[in-house]
Length: 249
Image (cartoon, rainbow, N blue to C red; front, side, top):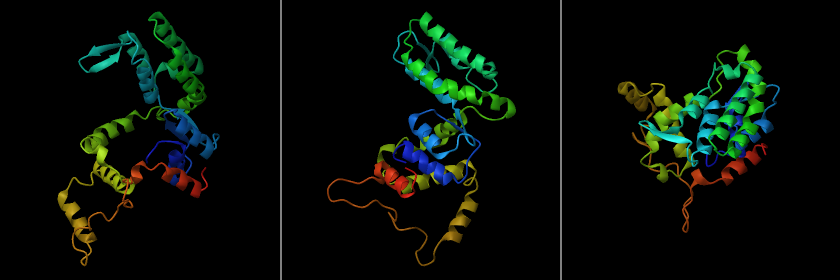
């Protein structure tokens, strides 16, 4: 979608077709607003993604002198801060109860004070995440396999999607063609193209004898303009228009 705003998330939740028990996501304004609008919080509980929280803490300190060191694997938080953020994982003792979770934040702020690092952006992350995560801690004991991070999904995106887009990402413009390409990425990650002979058989079975073996070029295209080029992939009004049409906004 052109944006990851509230309208985009509302459309995704609407197309999901069911109400999940838990929604694990970055506590960003767009997804939070859509969650609160679409779901009954007594039925679907929100779980802040700890992977995103660790990354936001890193980014909040990115320009602060004394917060990072250069390592063979790249720029990283200084060891004691890095060790502290590494506690943001499933099974960590900081999620034993809400007191341990609050203590983790107190210790983070103490580390920042000791190093004379800015705390304003970290305080904003505490406001956004602390109480939401504290509310879900009792559920972690009941559901021992429930994730508290979207890091696994982020790894799949980094491994399968980003390399494919690296050379031509600025050239993508049509929303339907782009999403069909992502359908192929999902199919590939599930082994759909492991056996070329099977793929060829599917293509032959699907081919229309009258139209030949290939679809006409640009069967899916944006409306042409004589002045400025139009890109459906970047048209934010599509999101609000469709969300309004479906009664989601």
